[in-house]
Image (tube, rainbow, N blue to C red; front, side):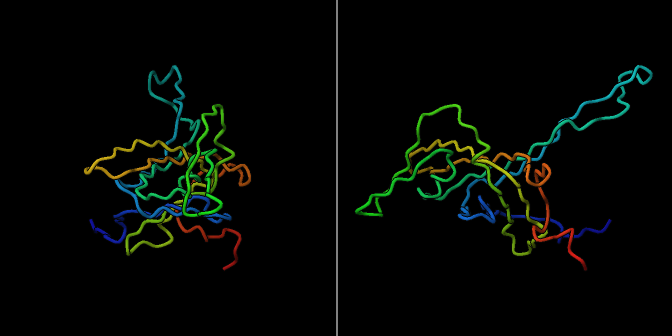
Length: 184
């Protein structure tokens, strides 16, 4: 069996929220690894004549998400990944900022969903290694431990939703510039 080492990807990734949008947010400093999860839910179709063996399996749903342990400390970026958060900038001194988060509940995530791009930073990575979540909303969980032994990591998971503008497209693997309608 021949081994093609060029097909083995390693290393960290850059994650861009609102990729292709008006104000993309790029995360390049993570700790613990960016984790992409794609899952299918299924239902077995049994028939009496086959006993407990399935005659077929139906895909009933698909989900995708990317967990990003963000190591960067940036209030502007933080305000963009906490749905409903507001960045407050002092009018007299723009270096004074804070992020305000309301305790409001029953907030839908879908309106906050934007395109998310994952790009491996391996020196041999190509656009073919790119992953796109076409409509994903951030959910952030902060658990900061202020000590000499810990970095302040903002754990954010971008949950994908079907993009209704693109016939329910959920996730794409490969070059985002590939165009099925282009003529060779």
